[in-house]
Image 1 (tube, rainbow, N blue to C red):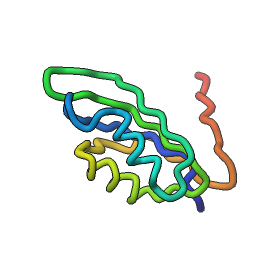
Image 2: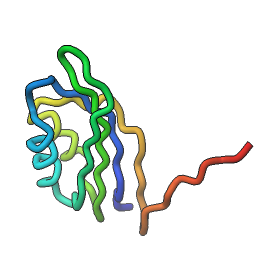
Image 3: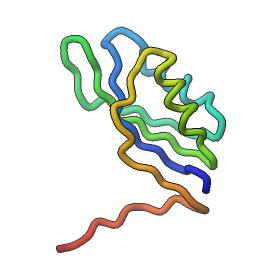
Length: 94
């Protein structure tokens, strides 16, 4: 089944890569149609980001390699959407 959305927790150093370089590296991967990078944490040496990637058939290993190639680190994959369409999460009510 095709991967349509991938949400990752990614850290990078403060200086390299810059967010544009990181986004461009991910966007070049087969199946990627859109990339959203949001900074969620900054400390002295690192910048924590949430990265959302969307497309029709995302090559997940290639996305991870592209992130590592420019010098960032994938800490976790926090959401994956696969199938014929993107199914949005519906929170449970208690």
